[in-house]
Amino acid sequence: MPVYLFTFHAYRSWSPAHCRGYVRRGEGILPSDPRMADIYDRQATDPPVLFTPEIQRILIQTAHEVCSSRQWRLHAAGTEPTHIHLLVSWKTFIPWNNVTMRLKNVMSLFLGRRLKMPKRKWFVRGESRKRVTDRKHFDHLMNVYLAKHRGTFWREGEELPQ
Image 1 (tube, helix red, strand yellow):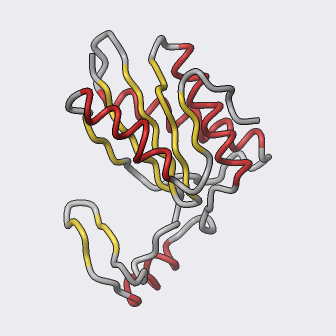
Image 2 (cartoon, helix red, strand yellow):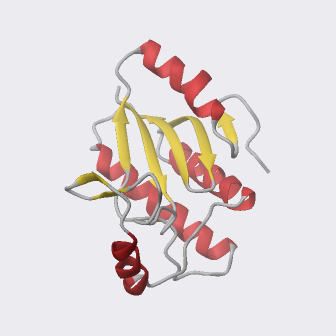
Image 3 (cartoon, rainbow, N blue to C red):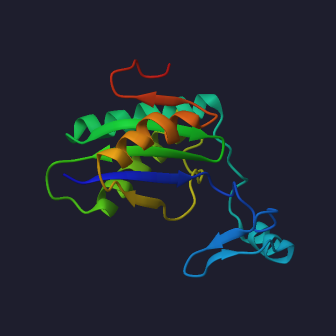
């Protein structure tokens, strides 16, 4: 049974001008670059997104609904204003990218509807995925890594955030 930690970043939440640098697809981590930040800003189609507590709750509720309706298992979620982590597993053969595509599409759709901004970009292109290697890794993610996030934290067996 595959178990993955997926990370979805908020649209334009990490500028190339960030003091810790930035990541560019295919090039990895790059040093801070204010000139590139200006280029990104000029090409942007929407303003930056930060996941407010309300948005964090909507994202977790939506991810839970998506997983439940497809017999996937959402074990836990941890959020920050700039991103959401989802710890997900499933029993049948489904490529991980089909799972992330469905989650991201439905989360975007629900955010647009609930916040009355249907055409808005909510996430950056792509996502991060890490396959969970063993029980120790899973327990660390559930009990330490996700729980330490500053935003909303939810795990199986708890009431969904309202």
